[in-house]
Length: 390
Image 1: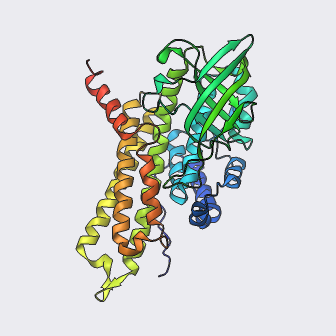
Image 2: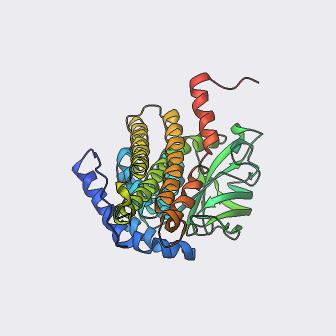
Image 3: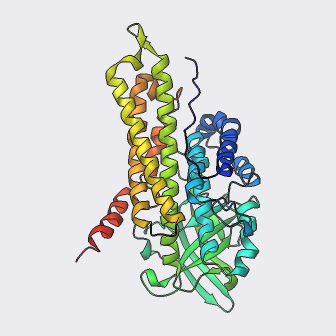
């Protein structure tokens, strides 16, 4: 059955520079990412060379200041870049989102001297970051983390284990949240740790149902010593920094989810218009046409929701509730759309000859990472009705 090239998304972009940027991303995606995605995902190959290319092209620091090597792009544009990348391969789109998340603490809370020393290499020097918040016993309840950082003169000594770390074992730097004080959120501090720091080791990558090309691993900190100059923000400020980063990161996940859903819809439409049964394309049958229409509507609604939240962020207005809504809706939509895409292709959809089964496996993780969708509902409800009473 012939391949049918998907129609590019008709985007509303704020500037001519943004339009040129999206055109560049689409060219890279079509030439360097999509053609090898299925083969490399099946082989579990991490495309580090693609991330180097993205860094050289100025695409790893888009939402950050050009003063430190960033792209000065609003989130409205940056998220649409993520969507394009995730549509070509989720390992890449999500990887860029995680890298941006790992840069957030230093960019937003570091001193001017820290930003000048570290950010240029992080944003445009070919480095790749990891974000270390979750632990084996503290996922959704992140404020109960146990990894400790103990002051020793002008240094800090970090000991503990982080879990579910995207880029675990391949990252060049890690933003690490560790306990420096008492129990709860107020005892947590943020640190910037080099990926090759003595005492930092990675476990074997998790064996996942999807995103096999993106390494997810535990990181072990066995007396990792770093200078106080790598502490980000004040002591005890780390949890607030983490929550701030997650609000932005959830928008990244939402955009990636829309990208995966768009890829699934494109594949389903291409198949339905080419596949013939009973003497005509199956796209002629009303039941299937309605399914495609519902898929497209969910995607458009998700895109509008994450862009509305991004515009609030760009305007300097509160966006935490809208970020949770976007993450919740877009990832649920991706799960629904990819499942329907498999159904459209029938038996072929269940085989690895077509990409929709991979999209369905990948969509599932997006409902879990950076706060499960149950947590998103809790966040939204707290904004509406206040904290839970006990």
